[in-house]
Image 1 (cartoon, rainbow, N blue to C red):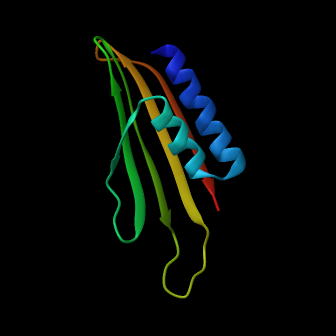
Image 2: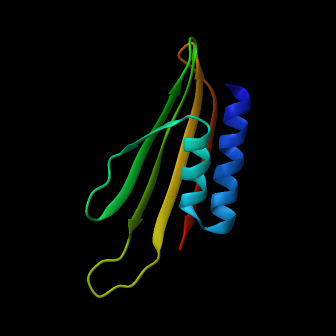
Length: 99
């Protein structure tokens, strides 16, 4: 599970460098991580989860427009993933960028 989490972190970092949410989504799905769409009309939100006997990878991707009335601000993109084993958080990785 640690090796999968290492690949997930690399995908997150690459998504931030390229400003490309789809890169992270494609890699996560290829690694067997389940994606659950929790989006709304004004935001993109996916939850991710992968479980084995004693470990889990869980997290979320969120993208939303921070503009208000008479404002034109960039979207905010956030990805956070956590590796747990036996209920204990072993590692957490977070990236955020605007586009």
